Length: 449
Image (tube, rainbow, N blue to C red; front, top):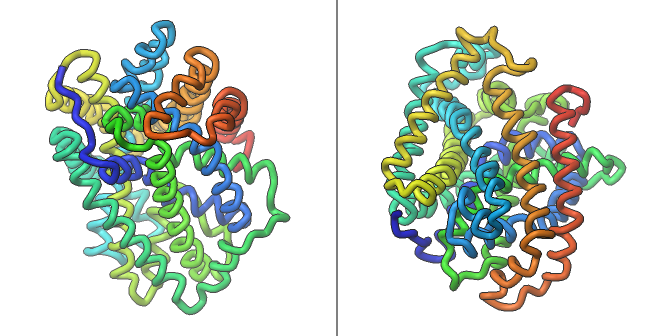
């Protein structure tokens, strides 16, 4: 087995973990949900949940990783032999996500370059659908993106993941702040800013809570094995609680700034119609290119925005791949390069299938879903919350919260340990069960969020 590296310092860990948390969900789901649920009211609920629910789950996962010095595949078994199967389930989540996330990363890569060369064409209603339904070009850009991801992971923790995170994360923050400042200072942006920032508590509802809860859970890379993996590379000299708060701050700041950038811009473009702010790929690849095409400086803003999205997608795909590779190194004693290339071959094979699901295999469906949407449903709406809920149960009732508290207190007193124990045993599992049920109901069109 390879000698386990550690991050060279707290900053490297924070930037790498924040890079994992900051992904496409921050940029194409958060603004939509914030707009739909009253802007400030949604932000209010989201921040409270981040400081409570999010903090508890992230501390738990980082502590499991640092305590065991293992990837999820082996970490759960070390904590409790009878619960070793949960490590396999936790690792199955990134295994499912990696291929289609890299395919979407390929779409982002294509748009990053297309926004320079053919920005007017990308604003066409049919541009995105024509692109994804073709065969050769999506696979080419997919190959470029997955190759970049694989290359970084092969270079390892210090020379690959940490080094790139130290470059991309500050660049991502600078671009996000710059674009946000540009948007909010444009004439006509004020109605969108007010809607986004001023809470309308009349719009608070159970759906607002549910939407914020689900967004937070997915946004922070919880229950994907990533925080356990990165925690296993964290030095015993670093504070887990301090690092957790900084990761949350970075993740929430990027999501907040994404909303500040996107909502006023779409409001101005649509004349104040919040229904114009769609979610998912349609926001990223259909609505926003139209908005950039209408902006005076759109030919500069558009490419900068897609560079931002590309950085976010790349840092997330790297962390997803690392969670799988780390497991192969720990359990099978493989060298990093061999383990990474094995996962890459699998990722390419399934990614090609997902891509063709929009083209020549578009007539193929699985319980009503396209191939990519089915994988997304199974991973994000079923296994992700299931792993999170079972992790809380294991910590709360099998190994007991004390085992996590002891790991946290290596670096000083854990002042909120009483709150932590109650949260991880009773409240967090109920919250995650709500995410599980609502996610399944949404996927089948029974519940609209």
